[in-house]
Image (tube, rainbow, N blue to C red; front, side, top):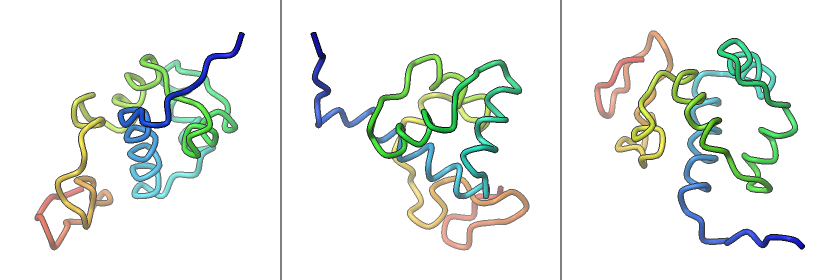
Length: 104
């Protein structure tokens, strides 16, 4: 028996998009993200992250919690739509967003 995945599951899509955005803003490859997750005890393959970012699979609650540790933000912030369209509320480390003033 197969389980169909709702196409309008906005939370899962938002989280996958946010993970991709945060990863890119930090200059991390998928492999680097896997290494950061492994360093805190969450083991996942690069293929699994790729599928999640391409919306072919969903992110588990356990992984979402691990991502909060890796990206250094609370779950609510990870799930929220960024307020700043320029930096996505996460300017690169050592830089300040000229649009919103946040520092990385």
